[in-house]
Length: 302
Image 1 (cartoon, rainbow, N blue to C red):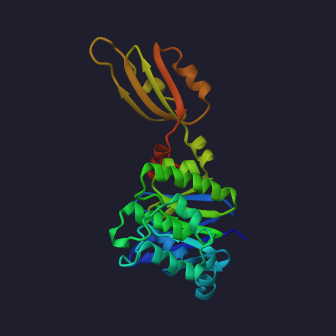
Image 2 (cartoon, one colour; image 1 turned 90 degrees about the horizontal axis):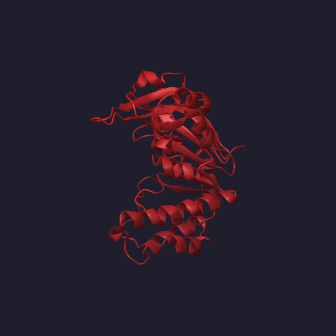
Image 3 (cartoon, helix red, strand yellow; image 1 turned 180 degrees about the vertical axis):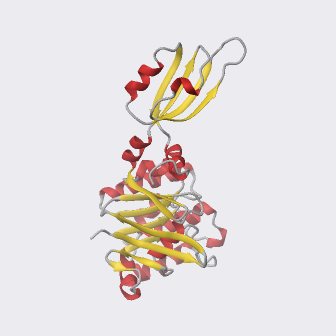
């Protein structure tokens, strides 16, 4: 039994389809990234998984508890940590009072450890917190009872770069300890650092679910070349070349700069451009942002 099992999950808001027949699993001990732009349906999925709303069709199970079975799902949530996209804590309470309340419900054996890493000002009212401090308080409450599964919606929102780095290192440690994590994000470079697999959601539909490294391999390399002669897109026209951008040389230098994405064996590409008067040729892994845009733009994987 996988910690997260989603089967045909569908959610409508009137005539608006927010999730359309989603099916996937999150394996035990993995960090699963749920990717998509704002409005794609990420938060709707998470709210349904957490039992805050009922699916229109299909179902999902967290730690074996069906989201449609309120009693079983409430019991399972004692072993689940949750961080919403915008934590809505009682702003009149202090951070310490908020954590004490959560501790009374689900325990707090890891509170001190987490407060050393994430350090919200516990004795100040939450209404005085910055966005980053609210997020750090949310991270502490999500993990402090040592849950088996953690569900997070944009977990690094509002954190400064140092805290983001600390969070990523912490998450890798949680993975080694066997904690299962399901996290949504649009920070693709961050997801690449911490996630084993990703699911890409586009306009309420799941486009693909696969390992990050496999997604990158399938989505190609980013190629940048400079040639001491005029070139155009036709000069690199071959199977696997996509999204060619050309900047002709200015003045008398005749230098052409060209970039494109390439899927396939690099050797034929090198043979193709070897006959040109090249000044530079860089072939590197495609930025994950560009990989995602290929999926979101509909070019990949139907």
